[in-house]
Image (cartoon, rainbow, N blue to C red; front, side):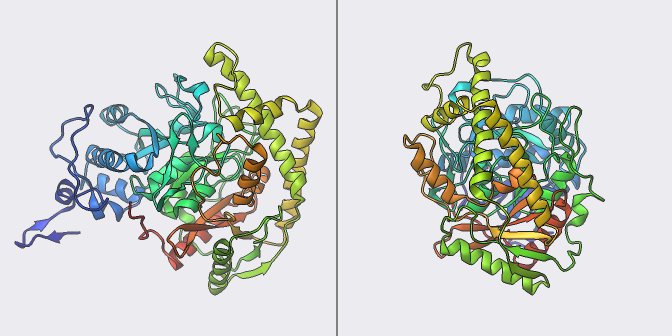
Length: 518
């Protein structure tokens, strides 16, 4: 592609990249960071040209030598400098390590040279802190890479930073005493979601086209909904979590990414999926690469419409409308949609989930004594975190064992239900993005906090308990411009079907051109 100057002289992508602003409004002149490497060009960004490409598209520009990986990294660096003070999406930046990775040579995978960021919880990179958003781990620096990080590097991704998460991923907003509040690019007074809210803010603001996230109760899909992104939670066991921890919350936590495009999510799952030695979970092997599912026919799907939460909590009219509109869209695409009631007794399922969460957190704080060299106290963690952990310590071994058995029975009930349907459609959230502070772990009233969290995201945790794949698709915006996601969940192991449907929805109602004015 070429553009023409007023004089008629052609201008190519590389020249555009050198001369234009970073897509954050008018051109911004930024000083070169102290750890920057001098290159043949002084970057002010990629402007609209950058925003036309997802991660695979940027990798293609690098492969065709239309830009260099270092030029792209510098462009991202300047976007971080321009936007992170407003958003607080990143808690740690290490562009020097990313530059070293480029000098050594990134992997030769589909994303060779594309900048990438890791969520600050549940995943380790040698020489980089993993704080889990907690003061108890603020100085923890592992000397190894997680299996998933190894696979990201093999895919060619250039890792330059850590994105914010709330303490131990315990809430559906991204706010912590350690790193402060992460703001939603669509409205800086609203939550970006949690717990992958730093990732969602960074991708929504177009600092980068994809970022790592994890989902233990909705923590990829919830921020995707809040920030207008595609958020995909794979089937349990699809993405590795080792080597030091092969499961979290007894298999409820799953890792993947938040992206702008469906195809990036599919290709990143191709790059990372597969069992690792020692893993207790194995997901069914796909028939072919997930990227090949993007654009493939879906067939006529049987879709269960489940708008009402099993909790009985109310659904905001905007979220209800989002689901209804999505149902109509699916019908227009040839699918059969019918209202259905999920076969779940919510109090029993949620009680089991919370039992596992509480016990798991109590263990994490006990493990933290090795890092701190002393026992963790209520001064090391946030008030709600402390109360949840104390509740976990009080749970008996019998209660814990029963909770695991209950989760397995929940999976069985849903597997039987899914014999009638291919996909379940519901609102991702029961409310549009709420104000910052409402879902914070620093509140002192645990009952009020639990009520607010439960009423905000009542739909998502079920699919963590069952291990089913689930995605939030950005199909709706409120009248005042806030994103509202719609959730589609499939049978265990059928990630491929969700990618086919996600791509069909993306084509029918494109969202990539919708960008926040931040």
